[in-house]
Image (cartoon, rainbow, N blue to C red; front, side, top):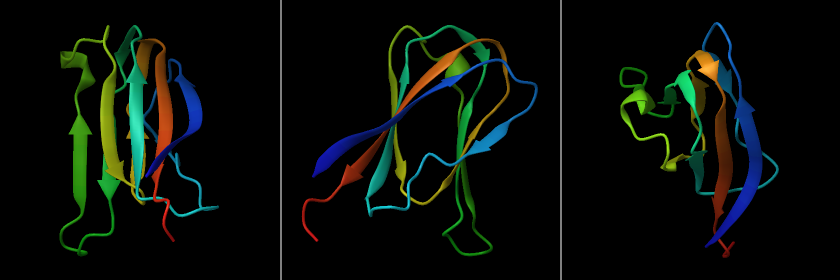
Length: 106
């Protein structure tokens, strides 16, 4: 397995939640690894939506990072083909590193 850095994203204040595509369809990978770096902000909870489940059973997961210690990194591993949403950030900036977990075998 390889862990490849895909991008660094800086989220600033915004008035509404936004859906992002952190993924790249140029190559096949197993999962997306999100590393929320220590930063100061208000709001900005992360949510991912797994649409690959049955139509009756779409999985939505919300991570309330306002209750966590923002002076330490917060790491999530999510399916490679889900939607990502960042709720509105009222104040400050949120830093995110996006990695792809890639299999070395074909």
